Amino acid sequence: MEKKNIDWANLDFGYIKTDKRYVSNFKDGAWDDGCLIEDDQITISECACVLQYAQTCFEGLKAYTTEDGRIVVFRPDLNAQRLEDSAKRLEMPVFPQERFIDAVVKTVEANEAYVPPYGSGATLYIRPYMFGSNAVIGVKPADEYQFRVFTTPVGPYFKGGVKPLTIRISDYDRAAPHGTGHIKAGLNYAMSLYPIVDAHEKGFDENMYLDPATRTKVEETGGANFLFVTKDGTIVTPKSNSILPSITRRSLMYVAKEVLGYKTEEREVYFDEVKDFAECGLCGTAAVISPVGKINDHGKEICFPSGMNEMGPVTKKLYDTLTGIQMGRLEAPEGWIKVIK
Image (cartoon, rainbow, N blue to C red; front, side):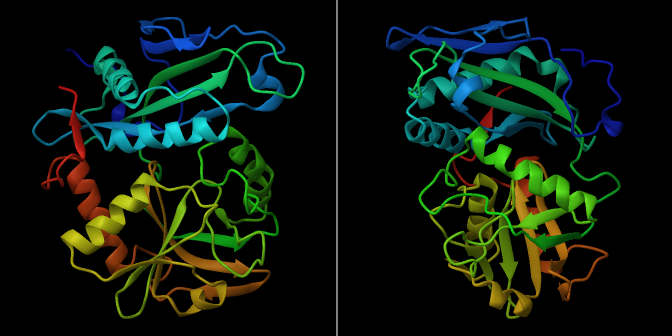
């Protein structure tokens, strides 16, 4: 298929409408067969549950053109599982995992002309999401839902190369101790908007959220998990019931241990420890790993030995290995790559 006339090398991380999107509706206790449509507009009641009570969840993954020309997606089964977990927590009907993967495949196939070529630095971002669609005025779950998947070509998250970030300790909480921090609910991201805008206005790239119960342990940022490297080369990631189980983070930890031979630990990480780490990174779908150069704790700075000019050596090796797997340059663990075409 002939590619769209897009300046792939200069794409930013934004929305571009593509030709088709997948839609399935839940009504009278069952999902319909679903289909691909061209219309990108959604019409719902002014009293729709999603508008009144934020009953919505979503996922994010990417399609890549590999070195040998295939179009693939990375571990969509884990996105399907996480959407199921999110739906259950928000009292929404589960969209079957096999249908989730099929919907992703169909949507990518239908928008093949928008999948950026290998080496362009761009990818096709895939956004599956679900929301309560019928009118609900009393506080209760909706009776009708819509599951949708759209795609958009995006450029690299960081223009001009990956540079270490400056982040701050937030005075706000991202999630409650027994709340929804462990699922990908839209409401979690709404809560993080004010702190991230405030951080940007004050010259910081992101917020580090501490645990809301004691404010002594590292949790995550508004949209990424933390990954630390000790001075002896052990890779550590925080463990908490209110942290989103990042697919990128889980993949990086597997690669670190099973492919690269590093010692790894998933455990509670106290903020007092952070000053002793050699490297720090934020991991997620958009950028894979974003290195952190320094953390500002109310005016007191923690500067990592890896500095503010480039990724630390361990973080760089993890980044190169995982992106190599995603792009087909390195052999993937079994089941990690779903070939679309």
